[in-house]
Image (cartoon, rainbow, N blue to C red):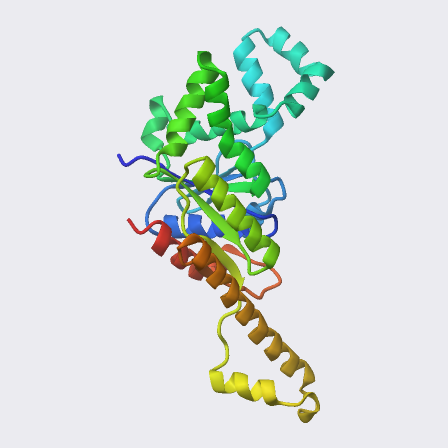
Length: 308
């Protein structure tokens, strides 16, 4: 049985990580794979894309061959220490302690470690669950800063805790994240200056500091080229008052041309800085996005990321 693939979809807040994760899931499922999408936010956007009310802490079916689950960090903390202490009374007293809760919320790496440990159970299941392993686990990750902290955690813990259950799990996680044949990071961005800057900075940390495999960046929300060169020349030369009653249409056309040019400039910057051509996904103009509208993005993403 091929090993489960693990994809982290990360990027600046608001760039469309959930949309990209959902499109990847849809594309992988259409290719026959069993997919699990792991939601790290609690905004319900992933569930809404597939027309369900919400996600729970155990995988549930979203569509054919697609399951999804929501990570609840508080539940993870409670479950971990209940399992560790084994005595329910001690666990309840500890979890009710204000000092303990403040410590686990503030201590760097505790929540991140438990999230990754939960992921490990889905990527490397044991016992009877191993027969129903997912082909692809897609993490709809947090915003860039938190995502980098998450991915840095196994390295930090492995150096600080050499032995015991935590040290052993940290080394397993470190090996999994460092295995580029299984684990990859997909950076999502949009054609805006701040988002592109953050993408380049994150790429430097992921590759240079953490030695992770990072795929071609995804440039999301790019307006398709809707006008020929001749059209662009004509629209640029048209006076604002030359098309009585069509002013809004002229403004919309010029906006689209400018947005396209801006996207091409940012794509070129990514290409020069990273040495990789970004995967360009189109702007989808709709009031409510639903999973079937993700087929074009799914094909583009999967042709690059799941081609093998």
